[in-house]
Length: 132
Image 1 (tube, one colour):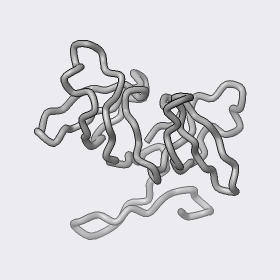
Image 2 (cartoon, one colour; image 1 turned 120 degrees about the vertical axis):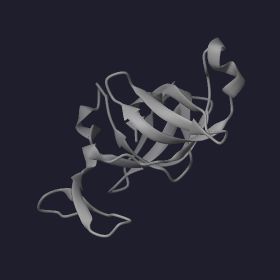
Image 3 (cartoon, one colour; image 1 turned 30 degrees about the vertical axis):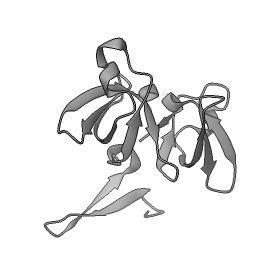
């Protein structure tokens, strides 16, 4: 991260580099699908890779190992421990929105990620409040 501009340098395969704001990056993370609607229940528990994000609809495009692509809501993906995301949509603790957090674990009992911010602060976040 360039501290002056707040941009990340992304090296391209073809050579060269781009300086991009965090909001313009998408981590192509492997995820597990959960809590799917009946029409997609056959994919429950499947893993895939996020390739697209639609912030307005709060949906990811997920490509399954079979090559099939599905639109999946933010709340219907489980990020792996160690994944990094951006805190988003918090109302009562809005000061954390826009910060990067690392997933420590997903707590099944609460339905929330235990996530770590830089500086050591831990937050318990609903899946829709931690986006890639």
